[in-house]
Image 1 (cartoon, one colour):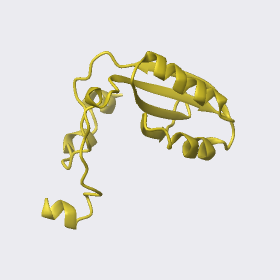
Image 2: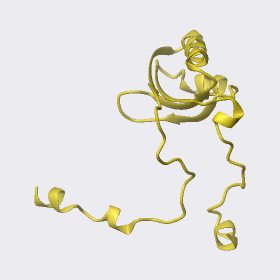
Image 3: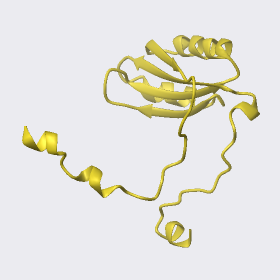
Length: 124
């Protein structure tokens, strides 16, 4: 711990709350598509909602990925209504979590083998 802290790899020490125990058992990931440069305004407005655990700007078929934890599907519907009321939000896709097999914070270790070229790719 001392080495990780002194190297700057530990940003903070926090308590990890249990979602269902806090009254929010409903976990979902929401892809949000926005228009133009409205992402920064949207991010600021969203960060005030305690249901949002993570906000990521991503590459791919969507602009933003949200990790949300709500009290119910009805609460998620309310959150989506708030999203659609925000300027620049043009579409969402929601993925409700049925079961979670692994959920953890970033780990200190690195798997070196992941950096090596794979045989299938190398042969092409």
